[in-house]
Length: 271
Ligand code: SAM
Image 1 (cartoon, rainbow, N blue to C red):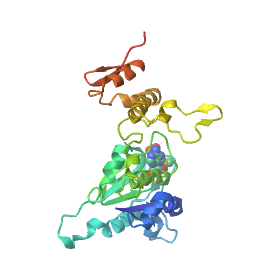
Image 2 (cartoon, protein in one colour):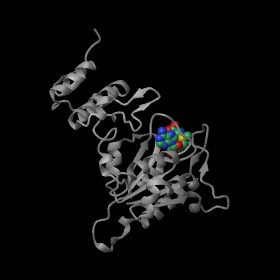
Image 3 (tube, rainbow, N blue to C red):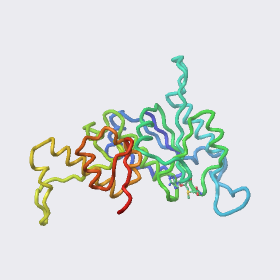
Image 4 (cartoon, rainbow, N blue to C red):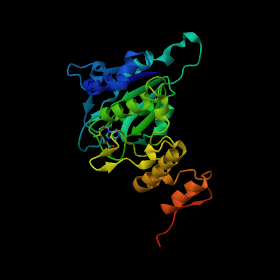
């Protein structure tokens, strides 16, 4: 996969040289480049922002440097090579924004299938809206929010999204099984995990995990997923497909105050 990140603070993306993503780059699993937006300005001061039309606080990122930068990264991406005669696949342009679609694990999986991702890190009050309209001719444009809060710039959001997508690429995470049982992979949060010693500061690891009974361990973990999700993220249970749950799992949900109705979990009204 090819990833291009455009930012006025390229140094902000330095952590992408570390850990699993850094190793994936070294191993050639991920071709990632960071570009300085100011390299695509034409004035002496390398200006990237100006005052907003209509007035108001803050500054807005100017369209022209963005168009130049995005044209440059698209022109060198895998989809730009028309020599093979295959129809060029549009790169995906991800524009971090608190006003974007919420980034999720499901979207990370979708993006991991793409040939080229381009991330446009906004700053100030954001990027002139016409850039997104124009870019739709050349890219699949996806404004994307990390969550319902406001950051100073898109760089932190890009670090999170690149890591979430990058670790799904084949070969990046050593044991691919660890991707299967994670939070959000099946619409639930992950069960609690423990390691040695079995007693630590008078606290015991749950006995079932020491039992060696793999069936019981799997069931305990599933039920812990239900308990934790009901406690911390009950919103996730609304979308959970409970149609095929075995009886023991229905009982676990009943103990948590949920009944299965038409294949969906319904919270029992408080008595
Ligand atoms: N005026 C914008 C608004 O209210 O929607 C916020 C601009 S914010 C100060 C500057 C930049 O930070 C945005 O252009 C975006 O790139 C990034 N950003 C801020 N919050 C974000 C979030 N929750 N998710 C993704 N990017 C975010």
